[in-house]
Image 1 (cartoon, helix red, strand yellow):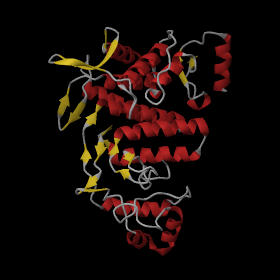
Image 2 (cartoon, helix red, strand yellow):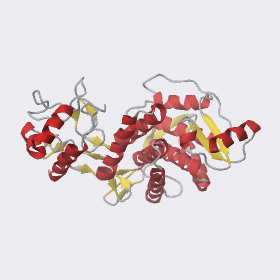
Image 3 (tube, helix red, strand yellow):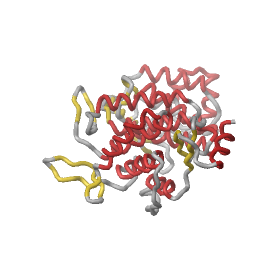
Image 4 (cartoon, helix red, strand yellow):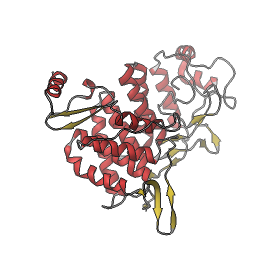
Length: 365
């Protein structure tokens, strides 16, 4: 993913998917949900492995969010694959263009890192893929500056509540795992703006476009918002009341023991999906947020069975939490996230045992 065609090597960010088995040529759409999930994943990958290239990848996704998706403190939904009805036109290059814009010296360096020696790989031009991870900031910045002068793909400017909440979750995780606390503040601002725009005191709207608010409620929006709020609560207890309110709201989507995705008076209830693809399902987000809220409130959770791999991998994180494979720290003061395992939650309070006191003194030292 990092070397191949799924990655926008010049500006950062992930294209929607690749159309070949070698992961060379993408469908050139850029989706907010892909940026959110990729940022979350690479940040966690860096925290677990210490792999520096994962951190660099996360920072490039942040660059893409800032330069492309952010609009008035929230994030738009997507960018089209086409430019003037030609797919990928903004992103691809002829060999002559690269050489002319870089000059011979930088072109030689560029050729050592990028695959531009053989036949063009897309419509007689090159979509850039890397051979290696050698740094090449200067030439890349030159080409990006040129690319920004081109006609850009059209944007889908809808503001989607749940996907913005996913982006906020990713910002929180990146803040913690990449040690960029400013990102957690930015995520808090995103959630506050989402509540101002979509929350009417009893329900969340779904989307906002050109001044029009779609008011219909969806489980996926509610679950993502609750999850983000539980993470903000770990930083600041002022979010406790909203966490409890959103918990009650999420639980309202469970009818007769079954999750529904949405329900309106003039249409039948839509059953919620358990399938995690390409983002966590509404059920997974709801159960994830509820599990976190229960643990952070100091209550017990019961073990739950794992579901089918690949189809429900995000849900299986909930199973890990419920089967005692996450850590819960109770401390007077927030512990720096870099000092505790990534599979951790923390809440404010008095440690309950001498063992907890010893652990927290050690972590704080």
